[in-house]
Length: 171
Length: 337
Image (tube, chains in turn blue, cyan):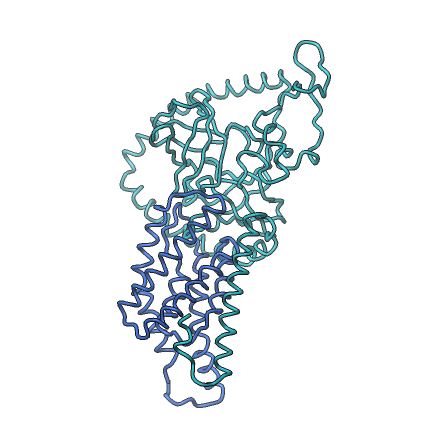
């Protein structure tokens, strides 16, 4: 692939790639919930949420808080969770990130991971509490495997997002 | 708010844009909370939207399910070859004992049919609505749901019980045109009235959310469960037909017992959707069809509508007590709240 776009079409394709890779990759992660896997307890990380916060932490400038609202609606419809659950939790996480950014200014990798862990803990607790409100009184301990796996998945998601980001901005 | 500390520059337009962005985000979040509240008060209200989304996404899971089943089956098939000899001997023993049991059971079934006919008791419904594939489940949420590849076009409606050849799976929660979602019996909001096969002790099977079921007896202070006990549905409540296997007791905890469901959704392919055992159980009181009282087996005829008396042999206490509140929220015990 040459470094200089050869035609108008190629310019347009690169522009689309630059714009929509973050959104598209997050949407694909949301769709992974349709994997034909039948599990008896919730141990798989919420991949959509993990990828969403990874993009948000590594590229704070590309998304405003309302992006999480739309993606949350999509996630609710796809996964069959109570409608509004991801809309509320994801947007709240984004607003909290905005606030944290205004306080902290500069973040490094470890601080990112800590913030991601806090967001994942908030998300798991929120999902569990909404399930309890909806009449599924399960113990919080059933969420622990998912919580640990999600926090450990952040570095992997960060590498994936960085690779996608390099490809997105490649010239 | 500390948001003012980092302004996007001196441009008024950029500042207003940022502010409006926050207004949209917070407003949208409140709207989401409203949807959640709506879902909590009236779970069926958003059914059409959720059903449509289900129709769109279910075929994706369905296409992948056969691939997953193929790869999942390889391990078991290979190991079967290595254990063929010992397995053969064991299966032979099991077959012998099963054959003896079958003969005894056929005699019992005949006797049972004869006695039921004598009492005028007949099952109202014993036919199935449809056969469908289980194509997926919620594996990252505390709600235990599975997706079924049949919807309203095949006659599936919310509330219907779902079983497999092994045992009870759950009941239909919401249905789209070609797909529906099933609340598994392991979900915390699922209550199934069951009884012990050994001695008929009634109990309630409540999901725990982690793939097991908690059994609660109706009597205080004693724990009738033993390891290995089988539980079947009792038919109380009118939703689940009686005598569908539900779970096997795996351990005891104080007054309750923990059981493993007999139908493991992870290994299932096909599920049978059944009709609601007694359709009157789900509707409001007025909508229930009048049931003609069967003639009593012996003794003089009682007046049909006498208060405090029950001439209908299909009378079920659990069903009757719940009726006054049926229109409000919970149709019967065993219904997801």
